[in-house]
Length: 216
Image 1 (cartoon, one colour):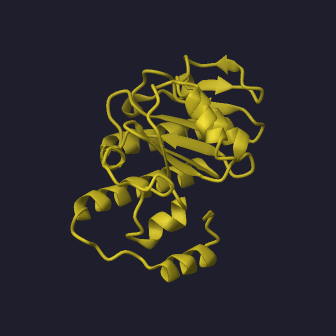
Image 2: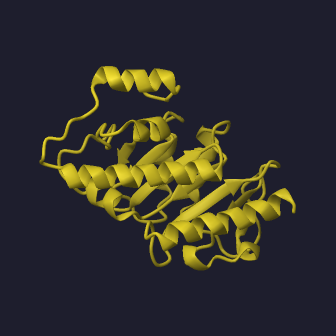
């Protein structure tokens, strides 16, 4: 099986897993992944993660031109911005409409520079700091501009009242990271107002140093 065929199958397999576990619903969410020759495979607009066809994934050449497949997600500016600003570290981008992440983004008192409280080591290890961005109309190219404004310093952001976006070295890593984001948001919602014990600054620093986490 060729690299492209394998990646097409992997996108559809991962997407169905996310859909089946309720991490995105209906026709929401989108995934992109980069081939070794620089082309991108992208989930089509209006498609359900539960019923993707590998042969119908949108395909872009390395110059950003659509060269095959169905019409792509309208969130392409969001994906493109991560590939442009983190070219050596981004092999895939996943965007979901996870319930707890979105709920957390709507609450007052959230730290916009790092929206996830340090409840466990794993969100720090897999995500670093998660930037909370303001609300944008779905498909608004300004979302891409907001990502570019971070100058490649964040691998994960949360679009307020919309959903999380994670970039990682490959599709598997991106999926695992966004799952961790949603689980940590769920923990934050469950413990909100209960004065949970958070990791200390020293404990966070140890995690950052040990696992070489981007943390600025």
